[in-house]
Structures are given as C-alpha cells and as structure tokens.
Length: 186
Image (cartoon, rainbow, N blue to C red; front, side):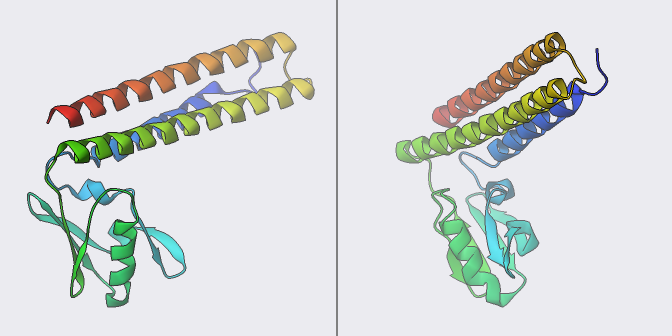
C-alpha cells in the first residue's frame, strides 16, 4: 500500500464535521435559555462576519432570557438584526447597549421549528462529510493518474473512504434523530 494516501487525514476532517454538528445541536436548548443557542449566529461587524461572542458578552440572567451586552454601541442594531435573521425563531429586544432575547414557551409549533432547525444542521453536516469524501476520491484519482498508486489500490482506498463516509453519515443521522426526539418529548 502506498504511503501517499492517508485516510486518517480525511477521517479527522469528517470527525470535525460531526463535532461541529454536535456543537450546533447543543445550542438547540429546548425549554430554557443557553448561551450556546447563539453560537451559530454571526454578526456583520467591521466589514466581516464575526461570532456573537466576539462582539459582546452573552449571558443567561434568567432561565428564559439570553442577554447580549454589546461592547460597541454602534453594533447593537447589527447584533439585533443578526439574531432576528438567524432563523432561530427568536425576537430580540434592544435596551440601550444590551440586547435581550426572551426564549419563547415551547408549544407544538416551536417544537416543530426546532426539529426543522436540527434537520437543517444535520443536512449541513452530511454535506460537509460528503465534501470530504469527494476530496478524498479526487486525491485518489490524481494519485492513480500520476501512477503513484495502482487501480486496485485506488478502488480499495475508495471503498474504505465510502465505508468511512457511510459511518459518519449514520452517526449524524442518529444524533439528529435523538435530538429531534428529545425536542418533541419535552
């Protein structure tokens, strides 16, 4: 077997996609406020997109309230707009240089919205894993074209990459289904 192709590198990248998905799911707190809820939100600030925790202090002063203490008063409206447009179903209220985000009561409609968001996160994670698979397959084709590995090695490595991809997609599906079930039962 050739040392030119390292499947561990591609597995590490796929693991990164799965870990990112887990972080996004942890932000979907069902019934109470969590600072992680705003992790996927990026704010248009100073000509670039920045994570919420880099433009202000995110805290949960009450069980059903998230507070963002914005450091630059000029960024308050950008923070409010980013939260409103994030697709999380949250309605921020500006109070000076603080943006307060009340967490709505979990009714049936809100639960469905949260499961849709979880599904969207799962699809993004699956796409990331498939992109890594595509990169691995392209690398294999190039190595085979450059005569660094044989056709048989390319096929063997390709099968290994596909098995790894299938396993990661199954893990994402399992995590997503578990979170959706958790949301619907609370």
